[in-house]
Image (tube, rainbow, N blue to C red; front, side, top):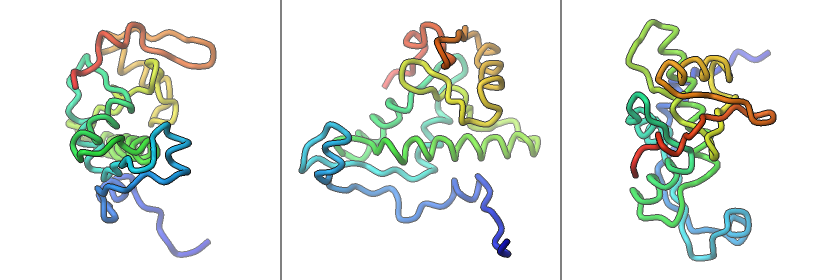
Length: 161
């Protein structure tokens, strides 16, 4: 074991590493993301994703894909990066959980950020159980569909872009 201390979620959230930035879509990216050469991808900062997640009011929901759309528009790019948007949403959720454990009340409501199709993200703090509880407390109905947990009629609750 080395003497290096693991970074907290909050430290990860505040580390922007030269982000946001815009990059040209490569041939490999184009094939994977259904874009074309010459298109651009906006790579957000972790704080930027957190700020979008934080703006979702009680009772409303946002998908990772909507976050990507907001990032793309904001930076005048073809798409928002699917990889970093997902990673940074997880970092924002972890940082919010750390704050909640410290007794802070005004945390990023990460449970309102869902995946495509209304699927709850099992990787968020507290897993499915906590998110289910928090979403139900805000009036949402959650059901199991196969191995996934889904917000019923999630489309009705999505924030307007």
